[in-house]
Image 1 (cartoon, rainbow, N blue to C red):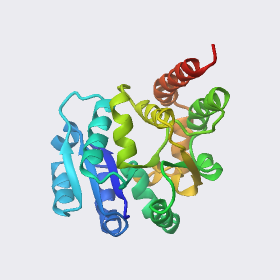
Image 2: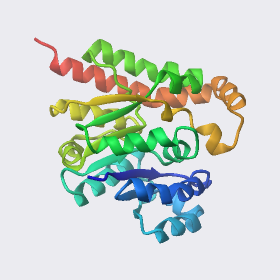
Image 3: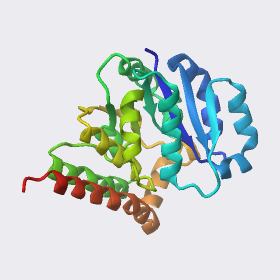
Image 4: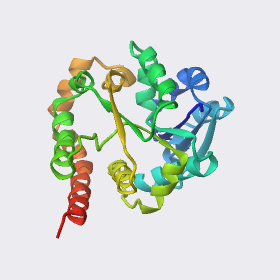
Length: 261
C-alpha cells in the first residue's frame, strides 16, 4: 500500500514552504496523499504559499487555532490522519524541511527507495540519523539529544532516537496510542515512541544518511559557518535541553513503572 505523508507546518518566514512546494510533484509520485497542519502564524504571514499548496490537491490542509501548544498541534494533526486513513495505511510522520532537503540533494534516490520499502516491511519503523548524518549536525545537538538515547539504553535496553525526525506507523497503531499522549512540547515525539512500546509494538529501526542536517540548505547558509554559530550559542543548547529533559523524565517514569518490586 502506498504510504501517506503527515507534516506539521510552522513557517511564518516562508523558509520551508517554497521548498515543500518545489518537491510536491515528487511527493505525489511517492505517496498516496498528504496531511499538513498549518499554524495560525504561518497562515497569516504566508497565505499565498498555503494557497499554492492547497491548489496542488495533494494535501489535506488544516489550520491550527492561535495559541495552540506544539503538543496540541501534533496530536490534532496525527489524529486527523489516523481517523481518515485505513487501519493498515502506512503514515510517515515527518518534517517538511527534512523531506525537502532529502529530495533536493545527493540522498534523493536513497530517500525514495526507503519510502517504497517502508510499505513492504513491518511497522512501526523509525528512521534514525546514521553516524554520518549525526556528524553533519552541530556538536551541541549531538551531545544533548544523545543524552536521551544513552538514557534509553540504560533504562530500557534499547537504542532509539527519542527526538526523532521520521517515524512510519500504521493508522491503527497511531490510533491506539494517541489518547495516552499529554506532552505539550516537542517531547510529544518521544512520548509517542514510548507509547508504541508500551502497547506491545516492536519498533524497528533503520539508520539513514538522508537525515543529515538540513538547516544550511534550507536557510542558504554555508554549513561550516552555521555549525560554528550554533555550537557557540547557549540559546541553541538551552533550546534542545528544553525538550530533552522532559524526554528523560518520561523515560525515567516508564522505567520506574515497569521495574520489579
